[in-house]
Image (cartoon, rainbow, N blue to C red; front, top):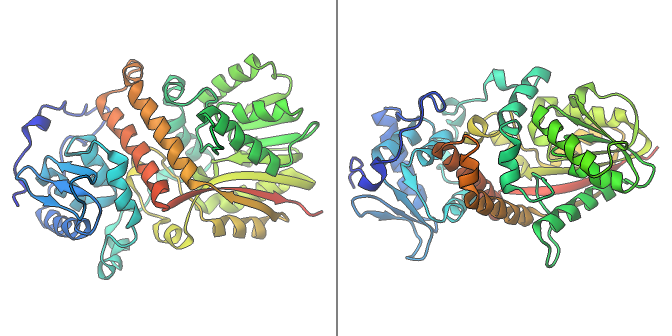
Length: 417
């Protein structure tokens, strides 16, 4: 197999703008590492249910003619990127068109299913030497967290409005029979609010406002809500949506880090915000919840999770997702959440549900809508590299949930006092 041939249909793609995507256009050059990466890749894909095709006609993978196809157009660049840093280079190669796929989530799912075994065991012992660690400047201090959140959630309210449903929920829906996405998002909110015991007269603290839908739902039950966000863009739209719902007298959205929260509440609710906290700050996050709850209070939490051993193995790794989508993030395990609550609060686990396949379905709906609305999104100032970045991010995430590598849980905790 030659790794130097180039697919002429891909060469004409625009070169990434250096001011937006510094260093992305030029692949790293490390022949020894590239050869090693190629050998590992060929070994890994030979047992996966995919078809990997090359410009010279070579086909790898265990998949038949109907299996999802990964087309490698620029093998030399692909393997040099993979050799330099596999956890970042694989995604970067997609951003620049070194490889493409019609069924992107279908290609990525078999990789996600075998994630723990793609690298042979005798090489995994060298992981800490070869892998990049998360940079210190992305540590989730109060200032660092604001910077990290700004890089994703302050991209553009118009962008998120383009592919989310009318609820503007950017977290997994919980589908019932025949539900639309909006109905499934409301089902999810009702579930987590029930776990938190939110009812008429409740005083509620929400950690992580999003664009206001949970606050609106809680206030519609007759609760009074204080909601915390560190995204200026989200606060602007959340305030507007809350006002439009006629609930401004019942909801107070504050630009405030959870560590700076004050007061006591009957209920605390947080939906998919813990992933941005950082493992070193989990004790602070959990203890803050305990301090903010009145005796007898309840906490409703929704969190993306992964198996505990995988969490420990990847806790400090710097991946494509960190570099391009969620700097400073780490996904907890169920055990990490339960241990953290037990060690830092008086609260006891009162209920839990898992619905990871609903997240795969949610992500597919978002990605379909993102692709359908791309012409509108392009008009907000985003380029084709950004389009491929978000297609890869949404498909990569969908594959994680489809494979079971990632899950999503709702938890209910209660104070027995």
